[in-house]
Length: 117
Image 1 (cartoon, rainbow, N blue to C red):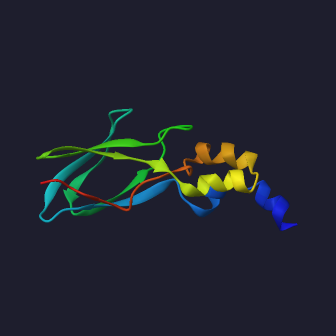
Image 2: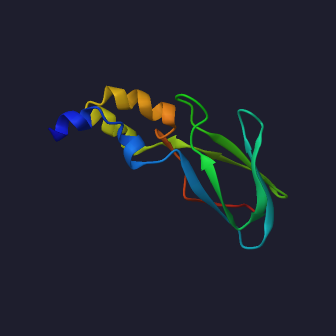
């Protein structure tokens, strides 16, 4: 009974999330701006150290890609494939293989970023 239910589940959507709190670490206070590379929209502006809640997806099957701008330059922050997405293959969840990209749960962001000074 449980196995058929699991086969219809979207693994990453169940155990992961679509937005992640990303901690921006800095030895001293530094002004940061986080910009979505695809839309060129500023998604966060503040002073680090801080934490910002960022979407891991930039659309269907598209990982989020951000530019983090400080007075010292620009760093990239890119989402990577969430290992839980592979659970769709293991458990045969073809539906999950389509749902996870739609919810953004197929991608993950790192827990923290250390800013260059």
